Length: 435
Ligand code: UDX
View (cartoon, rainbow, N blue to C red):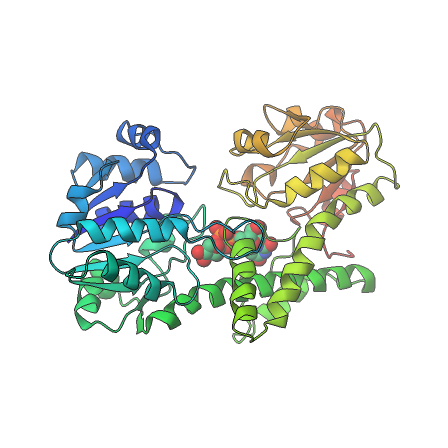
């Protein structure tokens, strides 16, 4: 099959590369010519484990191409994917669909023969209808079907999530389009991955409902964590105790500083707007958004309280800045709120993150970015573990103690055990663990 992938952001690049690795001929298209030049020179604009090698392999084997010129790839394509950004629109919280619609017009002018147009970007319910209308209006003779095929890729695990998904969702009522989609995902089909074929609007809603549900799970356990602290319980044991019930499931029950990233905050907000517009309010999702926002801001208070209520003039070392490990992504990262609040309370911030410091420098001022964890903690009055990178899990604690001003640790990811840290002479606090 021949695939054109419009947009070389996170989703487009990972999906395009994985389709090429399945054996299809894929052309990734982007208007950003420095980015395309970089990709053609083998430089990958995002941090994603395994992606660089997979791109290099498929470029070398001539199945993966990068270009700024959409014409030829779209003309020859069996399927054109729209994987452009859908950021939150300023002012009203809706998803901004201008890139999706611009891509639709471009596609309409270029397609030849039967072409499946696939929305991979996360788009509000009904966007597929709009894309179809735009293509029909721009090119009344076009032979095409619009399909919704949402992605469920986690940053840091995206290649595995693409190649070994729990399910693939295909939303269309065109049998011809279903055939093309089945051929594209044939390697998964043979692996018995469930392929859910449904209507386009249902497929669009599945994506939002999945992300919102996961956000609910995280926010629920975060509130239970707060309760654990008050009543002398341990949230990790509560998670295990409830997660072993198959009806609940153990994943996404890790308490922490609140969810961030490019999907959950944006998609929960967009879903809330969709529901409000449809006059079918989603009170649970609305509460999750509110509780999570407040939580990220409250994490700095936890640090301030731990230091006796006053951090002015104190040095605080943050280990981890990205919204989660194995990514350089700083979007909606809890560290942003934490740094801002600690600074306004007068603290000096030193920080280290293995991947995200360049990104972090765009969103936080006055932070001393350090060369490694041990450099970051020098003379610190407290260490705050914000992101659970593996390299922070086995720090040399004697060395840590010899470098800090005071051996105090606020572990917002529960990567150490309370008694272990206390036995080693640390004053230690974490999330939702009274012991
Ligand atoms: C998410 C979805 O998992 C993916 O299916 C979707 O397509 C895009 O959004 P991603 O944002 O990359 O992926 O990260 P994910 O691993 O889901 O984590 C999101 C946030 O939730 C992070 O801030 C993470 O720290 C937090 N989280 C996750 C928790 O606090 N506790 C958990 O148990 C799980």
